[in-house]
Image (cartoon, rainbow, N blue to C red; front, side):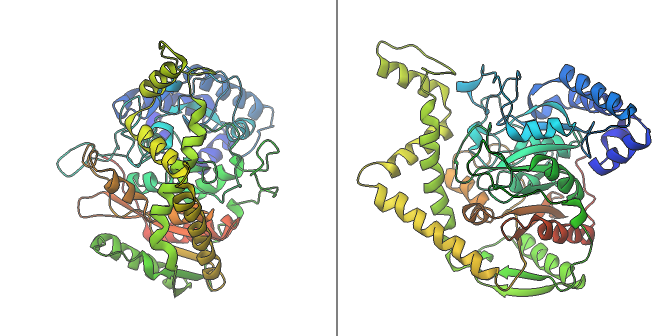
Length: 488
């Protein structure tokens, strides 16, 4: 029974709880047992079993009274350690915050809590969400539950790699992630799960440790598209505490899954066909087009001419915002403090010991592009290019309803394989970054396996605040792909 409970989807668990087939406490205990057995994955920075069981019992009491809080009531979930959680340590994967326990709750996790979701623990992540492989965490690398052909340990993608690994390994039914340049979608593709980055402003950023404020967005990571729709419904909503939160009602995302894409116009951008593109990725992309075409959609060739500038633009804008956001970690107000003989030396010691190499690299890049004499040459120019990228998407969406692309340029790679080549690591985000710069919603759906037996994902990009059409198309793609692979 324990094994069966961890195999459920959120939708199945919701039905089982409603029918009284098992209790929320039984469901939670099954996942806590699974977490204990899978600790070698290092998917969690902190486990909260007592809190989880207490919330599960509260859920059972509500259900016994016939008053469940909604679709997520009693559902065990994991929370990326970038979300502040009241009374529970929140580290952002960094030494500089490794003893920070916030006295408040982020709006997204507060929404999930209000919907009855049961938090199992905080998941590991790249330090301050900076990375595409989950090897930059102060708390050690996360292992992908999938193994390489020769049994080698693989990265789960990043920065939401701990959440992705936990969902793929059946340690939770869903998890929260955050996506700045692809940090939900790329790890979803690497681990064979569904990862949804909503439109910028759909979910509140209040209480999420900031990386790049104009890009960061929270979203769900689940094993099915339907589960993503259910979980997003509980996470989303206008928040007066976040000035960038959109004052829009939350639709019934699950109701949008009609299974019908007849007449839907699906754009295929020619600029995403990169020189030297992996043949297996290209073949999967063509199959995705055929699946949607067979379901009644119309495939339309489109052009996004500024796409080739998206990655360098991102790696100017994001580090610039990171350097500003991370300036607050100075050893004075909170977090780690490493003494020095002067104030300047204390600053230097604290930030030198508190931040890892990747964070220091991005802070230096960001500080450089914002410095006098270079602001106009780099940062201002990057913002102008960002406007052009968004304009390309707006023009494309005048003729199509969604856009289909690969999610990542490769399958998961071995831990340490690209550690000395930051440029190669940054290229992992080449298909996801344009969406982030334009603030659009994007979803990665597992669609096949490569010749090594590792999962590959396809990405669907939607119009702003049209997650309903995005999810409808993703649901049809998921059904056509019939992806049933799972870690050994």
